[in-house]
Amino acid sequence: MREDGPDPDAPADRARAYYRALDEGDYDLLERLLAPEFVHDRPDRQLDGRSRFVRFMREERPQTDTSHPVDAVYRRVGDGGTEVVVRGRLLDTDGNRLVGFVDVFRFEDGRICRLDTYTR
Image 1 (cartoon, rainbow, N blue to C red):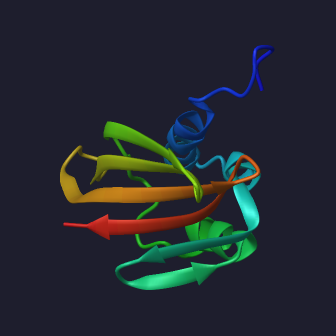
Image 2 (tube, one colour):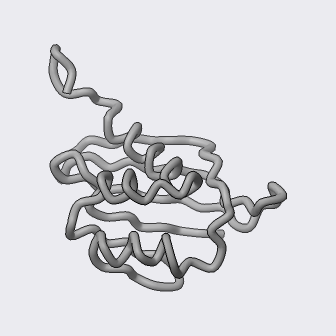
């Protein structure tokens, strides 16, 4: 919160921090960014709950040594709250593109409560 009111870029900054947490293996940061009731819906599965999601990212995901370059960030504020859409790429350790993605982040009380991932 800024002195002159809420920071309109805070949700976009939190979305960027999400990728930084994944890429750096900072699971404490990842946990702080997510609401307890966090849901991640992706093409291959749905993960319900912050603890379940963090455990998956830490211990179960197929590749952990990847990076998520962000190509564009879009923010929409409406009656349903703030939504941030991120377009990016998942790269392997050699910088080869594994998949392109669009992630749609939903926020409640400043935390990420839902993430819908679309890949190509």
